[in-house]
Length: 198
Image (tube, rainbow, N blue to C red; front, side, top):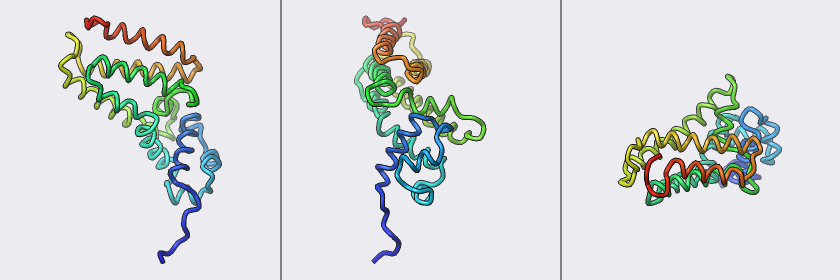
């Protein structure tokens, strides 16, 4: 029989609970006690399974991108530029202000609310966001229906700026219906229905 005691907890479930805590409170606003309480484990178990707080946060970011934030990668599979933009912007509204979700975006909170002592966590969030923007830019570069006059890199940055703005507003308590209205107005201004560039 292999040595060692079996884990008395489900690492995947514990990671999901850590994600929710970080999402609600941000990286700096989350203490190790907050994490161990939410995850239902002690500190040695946390360190032994996930590493330190910074390493745990990196795992949480990965889970966030592949879980609640998966709509962003899925949006890139849409057949048209307009649909890519719509899925990204509307998805941001649902992610940041939908029922049962913490207000705002884990990535945006971590970029804007980390001090010098938390620079590695902040950088991890920045790198995660850059990867998403790069993937979007590459998708737009390959789009035959990109509106005339639109630069793929600039459009990718603009869409990320819009979704970030939605996340900031959601974290500040702006309700879902108002964010939905803002999202639709932004989409109409950015990519008018007749296909002409604004």
